Image (cartoon, rainbow, N blue to C red; front, side, top):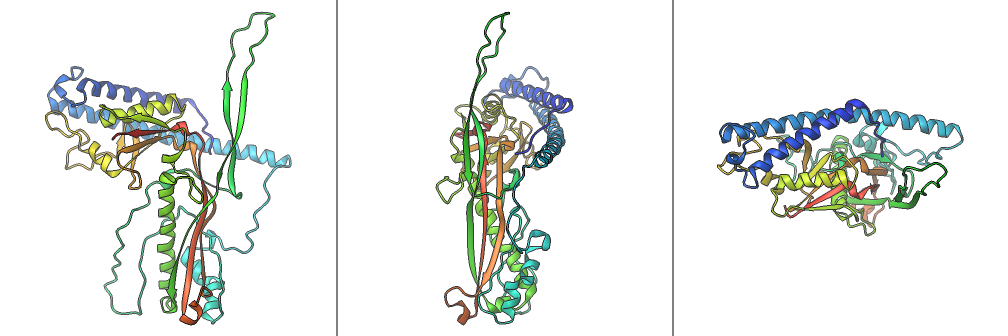
Length: 417
């Protein structure tokens, strides 16, 4: 988890953003849950003029939020540099971690996954007729893949490949990623913080404070799948490389994307955000959805002592926000002819199909971590069952990773949307 170095420009930018949010909140409070612009007295003009003012406030919030995000990148970079300097000092004093023992395992630096596959011992030995070789290939989980299907013996084709309609990857890239060489991510959590500091008269006893730490851990879990392929499918090296480079890694990442949100934590599942104990809850009740999300942001700030930077919504719930209209029918989030901003209260919104409809999330992602023990690992062999005599190959892919929520109160679940 990266350290954020605070500096005056970042603090000032956050203050400006929060002030703009309060101004917009006051405007919406005047309009009421029906968005009746006739009730708004702080802005003159007709409904269109007032909605235009509302959109202007939204645009100012978005601009201020982007400025904060850019300054946070600088702050995180400064924090990372400081952490690296501290780690270098620690290692110089005799600390450090033993290097891994992955041997001759090819890494992502060897080229893309397809090239690694066709150059591997497993493939080259298979071409010479050897039985049952296998070779592991590592690749980062956040690499970008396109999907593809198998190829039959060559015929004249249009060249167009139609991808299957399937859920895209929508959450992984918002989660800070690290690597781990352990079987679990183990960390210490401050579970008791009793601050009794107060003024002390001369000669009087100091009040006693209390601190307690508890060890926590998040185990590394494995996600995998396999696919049988005939020798004929592997005749053309280019097509075989494209095949391996596309479909199986996408399947692994798609499942990981789902687990980050909805994993139940029972082995071998990861524990996803929606099932973490201790996250905050804000009920929508009679509030408009934007108001409920703002209240969730406030919960994260006050109860979680965190700074929310992401909203996760089902596409159906975002649809309801995008279609909000004033009492006399004017669209609030932009006209139907406009794309409209995918932000709310200045925070980016990701429309995650894996997020259950009716419940949204407001998060500070700096308290989340995806720790990869091993990237997407692909192996091939013909020693499975009767594959050797049938001229088939088994291609297996998996990943080992842990998902950690360091501070559950940095997440608010918005229910009843």
